Image: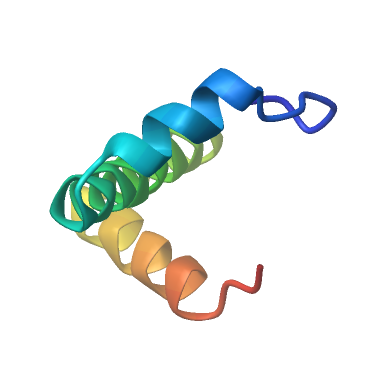
Length: 67
């Protein structure tokens, strides 16, 4: 969802129908997708970095993230 988009009533209703387990699974999937997107971005900025360094930087970024 883009920053200027609003959650629709249909989206709220769909989330309310989900079990807590399903909502947790969705949140976990979003988290891992965000990490992979961050890793892809870092690889594009630093093509010379080994995969270990990319992984360390992703971990560092997520450990210090604020919402």
